[in-house]
Image (tube, rainbow, N blue to C red; front, side):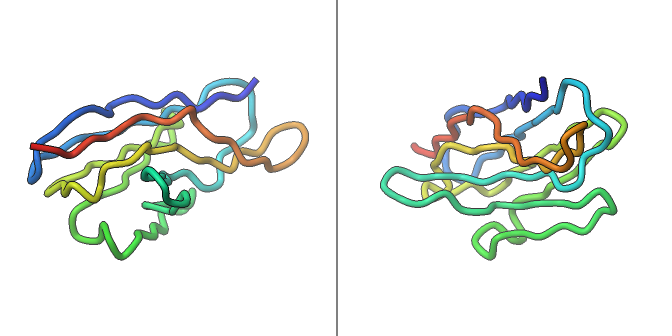
Length: 119
């Protein structure tokens, strides 16, 4: 069974930094895209950043220049370094991956990790 295990959320003051990690576990052939979405209270889930296996990365305009997504293909892990955090970054952050297994490519979601930016 494929799972995405997230870590790294928490409470941070405005201007601070956090690093989120997401590791894929289970049996599968390969991982296509990996990335992070977020959902703030009362809002829809939105893309934060996503990267392909080949290394092409897309960022939401709201996080460009502040967040950096990196990927370790050998560890099936993606990292989101978040700097200069703002209160509006407060949300539940969800890891997302398109993973190729015996039934073809499927989308998977992590359970989410809460990031709170507050003084």
